[in-house]
Length: 168
Image (cartoon, rainbow, N blue to C red; front, side, top):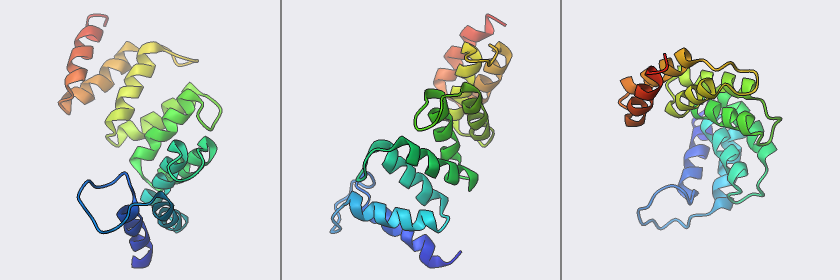
């Protein structure tokens, strides 16, 4: 990977209106940010791919398009961007841009959770607790993921774990 490709991504962050609160002489612009994010994304930069996915998911400077968001999230996830696995889980769980499937959401959440994504760990715990769409309710797996979150000192996990532990 050459340095120009990495520079495309960083140039996009200079123009990104959602980044930075310090005064700058650079005028923030979704149009310019997305131009550079897309260039870096097409060159295989996972951070650029998730940024393009986020732009489509939120309609930041482009028409909102959940299917396009999912396309870019999949690429970013396959390129190892952990947040993208969580985004794919959410897309599948709620049917955003892709056919709804809790089982597929579970797979993506698991991929993110194993890599340490707290949001994915919370979603896994919730899916196992609720037992939705062919996923059996499993309090042991719920407790497992909550215990991982507890080890990371997540205060909410302590409270929920205490409640779940009474049912085990």
